[in-house]
Length: 66
Image (cartoon, rainbow, N blue to C red; front, side, top):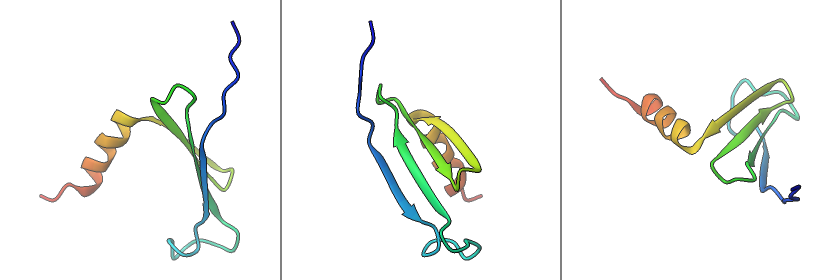
């Protein structure tokens, strides 16, 4: 069985957020069709796929204060 879906994506240029970003650098986040995670693409050079649980653990680690 083949299913056709529409995936939600969000896109922004990085310059307002990142001091090392160049003109036209961008980040795009696309939700998986099954809803359990998302893909992150940065300038077509870096690609990360995370489940929502992996993202939650990443947030904990990034915000961890000793």
